[in-house]
Length: 104
Image (cartoon, rainbow, N blue to C red; front, side):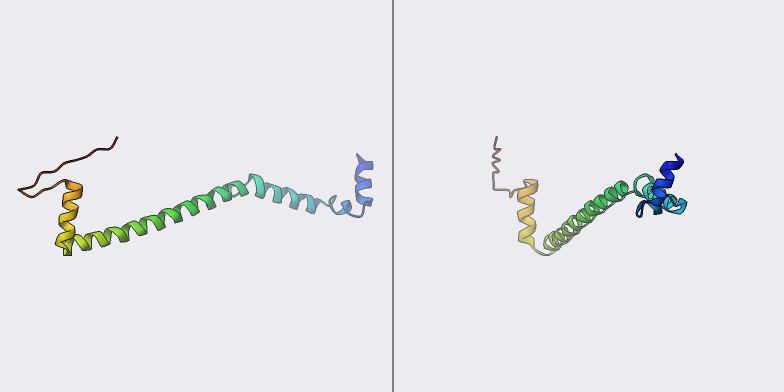
């Protein structure tokens, strides 16, 4: 064992690895990178969740804007209100018949 350590200390590149501070620093870096609470895997998952939440937020913002426009049209345009009532709620005038075709 002592021969191995003395050979490592003589090697120009490996002599720095025998230093206890370098070993401690390497162990700490490996621990933080792979085993800590904020390791690389958890950071990757958190970034993916953040991307998904941002996409959802953009989707809901467009939906909110679309709904605001629909509400404005329903409050101010009687023709649009009548069209929505006929299409979605199957409402009809007194002298009309409604036929519903269901595609299979």
